[in-house]
Length: 142
Image (spheres, rainbow, N blue to C red):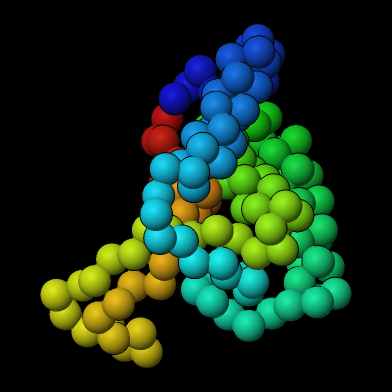
């Protein structure tokens, strides 16, 4: 992963990987039969209208600012690609297209045994956040 951490490495592979993530997310929605049009934000939290768009704009500005500081780490590529994938959905469909649904064999507090429906962009964002937090809270000892 150090390939993505270097500030002076060639940016073409990063751009290609970033683009590939967005393409995979968008194409994945065309190969499923059952989808959910989620007009809200993560976990179906009911936030919409101008407040939603303000939150999206602020989030994108913060992500690109953080990415500039951290020289486009792999984790940030995942987060931004997932965010853009969901933004494309929202602009094109008026909602985010979710299609992965998991029924759990046990109950979780507040949601029961049905995990909220999600998509690949959400997976990219979640993995990116986990990697980013891990790198921040558990830096390599020198």
